[in-house]
Length: 240
Ligand code: SAH
Image (cartoon, rainbow, N blue to C red; front, top):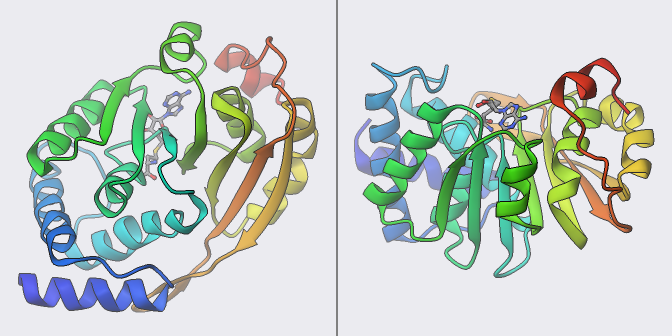
């Protein structure tokens, strides 16, 4: 796929999914990122997605579906970012945001930080560490919005994420077909952690059909009790 094909394919997919059009500079940055990702992925295992059209739809367009839920100039945490989804697409498309991307795997954060330098993304910083680590939490502080894709079931995810959300801010969890079911299961966790949830069903329209995607927004309406998050083994063994 050449750049011109990539550009028209990407723009069409954005349009189908109600994503604001990208300018030429942003398109060029996405193109460089896609090639860099696919190249590094040949020797370092970063993603199971190995062809350009899938990178565009399943990584880029999917990541950008959260953009409309993020207010102007917000400080955003991508918790469990992997090689940078949704954080890198957001950093390219939304220069107004300040993004921190957290992942427990060093090599993924190394890739993310190298990519940010390569692409000139001064609004994105990757941090290696575990979300439930008290030192990480103290150093990162609180965020207007926490986003997360493909990290854990919603009840577990809420315990990891809600302590990072400022009062009045929100978690936007990118969930699949089971979003509604997970939301029902997470009601107790959401209440205990100080949240209030709303479900948005937003099927992702891919070129070859549609993929289930829904966004669960959990607004923080009261402070999260200090004992959360617990150790990861405890969260998994005794989910709220
Ligand atoms: N969000 C990316 C990666 C999903 S894979 C994407 O959608 O492509 C899940 C990622 O979460 C892994 O990279 C894993 O290292 C990270 N992760 C899981 N539990 C974590 C925790 N407690 N703290 C920080 N990162 C975590």
